Length: 465
Image (cartoon, rainbow, N blue to C red; front, side, top):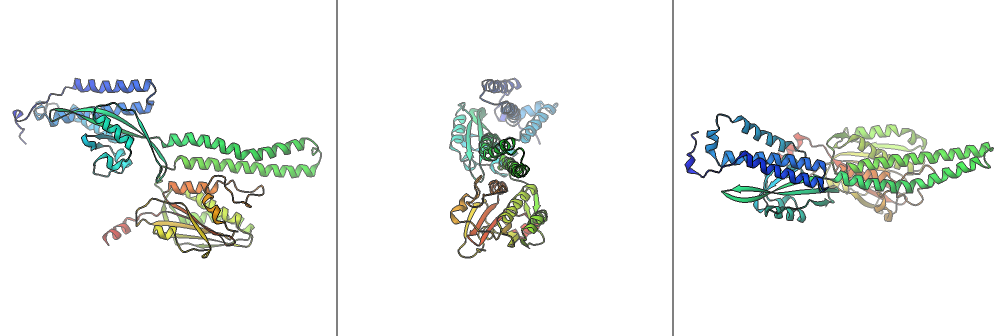
């Protein structure tokens, strides 16, 4: 194509030295923020790299788009500019942190893939207020568009899961149509893991110290007795050692459950991407617990299809089913029945609110619910026991830490009270649901439903239909 006449449009002279100077000033300001503790080292490094990338991108865009005669004059050596533009774009696209460039009016002009995924932008862009409904962040962006420096802004989201984000906003000066204008660079840093780790440490210390106090006091008392008047009594010694062993096992179970709960809470905001067959998973769990079923002469009935693929982490889903089945065995009387049913593809209402299995007097409560669109399909596992049942007033507290129903926590083999809390957090991470149905004297039914695997062929047929 024949190049346009340079006299047909104004010439804007952009020098590399000026662009480098602006980028250097930005980097120096970030360095000062880091030195005074306003930014962390990683945040400073990422922001500096982003400014460098945007500076190169800005220089190449203005010099090649607004000055076509400069393209012709430098045609003999295009490699450095082309390579610089490609490298800048690759650097921006490769950043794992969401970065956006906001123009006048709050319109999103540029967003890297991480930002598109984080905000759910897809291929189209629009106004920032349409995808990020955080007044403090929008006010900071508006101030940056007026050329004002702003402090980082923190905000939290409680649904679908708890998350914490820090937003860094910086004003950028741009020349548009020969007139100076301001743009805003928005960098979003997900600090959920850091917040969870801090809270988890505090919760772990508080819970562990509270729950370990009783068995430790028992051990100390028995040791003192064995060192005293029971020192030469073989019968008393054997009895006390047996109780001490049970208490030690209790502490071990408690510590294992606390660690498991901590790991689940740490990753709860990150949905899994794997796949697990719930039928195969239930078969493995029941095979492992077969000795406990035989010990109490519990009749196990399985109602399952050939397979029930679900999106999820197999190890965590195994822990879910293991907790539910172990609870059912623990609270079912000897000689009773235990039923486990699996469904492969249910709508949310079918999975969450089926017909009452324990009769009209039963109570049902949803302990965890997904945020899903209509038409989403779920794979479901239901565990029905023949235990004493749970009163309606106790259902809302079943997933609380260390909560145990009155009358079910006597003896050294009682649970830690963390099993259903672990189940709830795993289900939340999988964006699924968790319900309980119970009636005193009739037993309980615990149900977990998880997003079913999307079959591309079936999805295409449903769309066509």
